Length: 93
Image: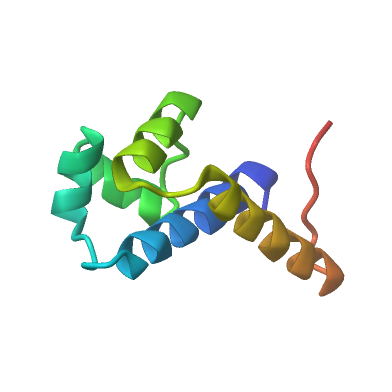
């Protein structure tokens, strides 16, 4: 699996988990409204089908009140675990 594809999946899963862990389990429809994003597009991000731009990532985090540090730390930790388990994943430099 290439870097971009893997990152899309891990990022999307973490975003979805954070959305569902919010105080009132924000629906995807409500999340789309809060972030000014299309509901279908947001769903595609969460399913790892789309990699959002930096601008869209900020829209998501600001609109949903998610900590940028928190989600990227979790993504990084998941990548490290997969590396330790022998998953062929690396960041191209």
